Image: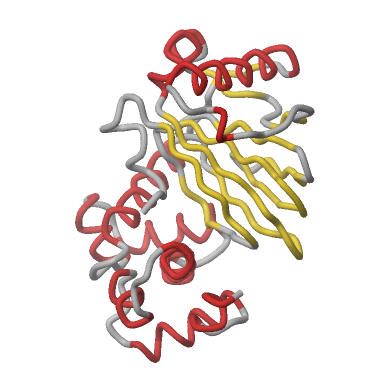
Length: 250
């Protein structure tokens, strides 16, 4: 999988790009920086509870460990780039402990990934984006409450275990917190239950596998944590308004 939290942790020169169409992904975070470029259409992006409406030629610059999600509005074609902090080491060290006040840039030039065919051209592009960000916005200190830190631990657990038996009770046992406390905290901060979020996360992963691998629908379901194929189909249609077969052919 190209997503999400593990990236930028093990690979010190990670640079991965991939196109997505009519895609959405629930709240998550990762050590890697992330760029989202809108080739066409519109996207709703939430970063640390700040909402952005992103349009064609907009570029979103998401810092490492910023909690974010994105949703397509009617139609979207986007390119995502994930890259490790080490690729922009000077910028990373200077701006540790702060985040952009505004994460959105307007990209006037041609977004041509084919020209980024070596590490130097990739770094040149990334540092140019860093320079634009510095020139266009202010930076504010990172503030994380104790509750937000607990939420991050829950989301990280989901990322590592979504394909297996993953329940809030297992999370509570692993983190050594009371189940009722985590349940209330999750709903308060996420505006949905743990189960609803887990299903959205699993279906988002399934969407990617359907579009980018040759795995059968049964294999996709199993690899995304669904032992019951009927449950997978029901949740997939509920969240995407399509069956898995229909989604793959879109």
